[in-house]
Length: 270
Image (cartoon, rainbow, N blue to C red; front, top):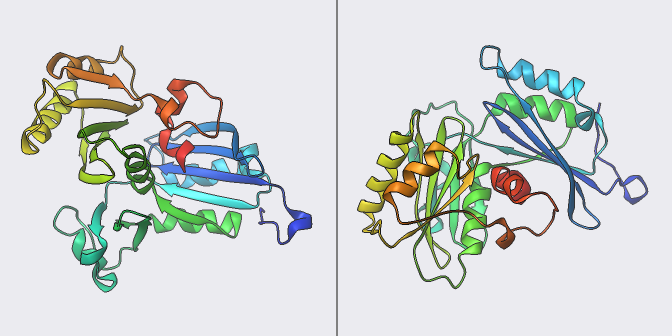
């Protein structure tokens, strides 16, 4: 069983970060002395088997998950979330912020992440059963939501950029649209998709709502996508300024490829 080092003589100077989704588990190991990501790996879940059991199996069988770390961070990803300005946040009514756009229940585990420097809270439903499994295994974990990492980092990168920038983060079965302007969050939304046509419909509809001209606004893709992907090609057909996000703007702690940094942006920035 893994435990965190109790004092400096026992420190390993290693941090484990886990990104947990319904499709699998991403993990990275960071050297905390040099703030460098040493390694990362991906464990895919079989959609026909219970995800919780597959998580338990990974904890028992994967070498990186049986090692000792000073810190274990867990980043959970789901679509049961929303962003709320600090001035409108009532900690006693977290479920109310989600109920109009999501199916939530009184017994759900509602939590918030604070986006430091932006006066925004991210309200979401935590995956309590999975977090409990990880707490049993690691003893102490720190948890936050993937969209908190995604939006917070893109806001950081928008500093002194006065143009509106649209980012799309692609993941299996869903994608997120984030529009920022000089460290202001103009829009965040998450959509489910099956076809490239689903993607372009939501992109053009969102652009229309914010008065963004497809001939002039800038769209950048992150996540699991490449220029050869049908989803990229259809966006390129209807929107003039389309590109893959340049990870050099954000790469501060690893030497992995540009594609790895785009695909695992949330993990690497956590």
